Length: 339
Ligand code: NAD
Ligand code: TDX
Image: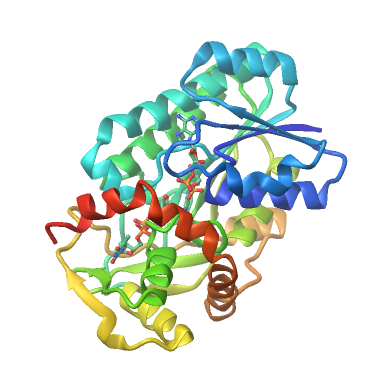
């Protein structure tokens, strides 16, 4: 089996590559990644030593290069992780999100059509459903919840998600889609809530919590997400859409307090800052369809997963410190300078 993994130098994609190389020693994994600010080739150092792994620095929007790679590599399956993925950046620069997330997905699906109707898996997100009220714990996103987005990021992911469904209906492309809740774990870029708070708390810096910290996210350990994708690409029927969630809903303020507690740092590091515009209130997933059809369930609760994650960040400080010493510093001032 030859699998093209796009966005494999980023957080979830790199974890997926290691998961697959470990589980299927005879599979070939071909990674396409543009190495934007969020992609880090160092993350793939160990994979690069494996003869069954190949890396191409490639923009998924670049049709000619993508088609050449497909022609040479003859993939059986494509898993599309590549995306601009940070909501705050999409508020500052929506155009890039529309290009990568929508047009890049189109180019990849055109290549799948051109080289033999290759199976295509789209890594979508629960953010396509918009948000749920804070005072209705009974409400959950199901796969038939209407698409209703809040940020340029989620709108671009929703457009891609719909385009993938359209390619199935119009052209018969064999697709599947997964819509997952918030991931955490090793190799997450320290601009997202959990790694940002771990890195800053470790350095005794203030922890910027948006608004009152009341917003709720459902947290899933990254390996549980990748195990679900593996099951979907091997077992799911063509055309199916699956929600994936951890069933671990927490308010942001509680996530930050747990991190402070594990790191033995004072609560006084928390600083409430101006809220994110259009900030989604609550995400919560009904993942009963994937359990019923494919037998997938999350294995790690948040308490266990966050300890593993904090251990990883403490044992791999050079990975995130090198990021923070680079472009990240300018980015941080751009985002938080006026808050
Ligand atoms: P990430 O930002 O860590 O990684 C994205 C990767 O895509 C990077 O390596 C980057 O270099 C690459 N990339 C960006 N633009 C590209 C382009 N034009 N061509 C080729 N490569 C490009 O993101 P992540 O958190 O790992 O998310 C991966 C996917 O999962 C995304 O599609 C995201 O929407 C989705 N998702 C993420 C979460 C989450 O909690 N992180 C939850 C649900 C869904
Ligand atoms: O500094 C911060 N302070 C803060 O309070 C940051 C970076 C975030 N937050 C809040 C905003 C959110 O309510 O924490 C929550 C999580 O924020 P992010 O880590 O930016 O994630 P989110 O906006 O929930 O989106 C994530 O989950 C869905 C991923 O980034 C998306 O790619 C995925 O689709």
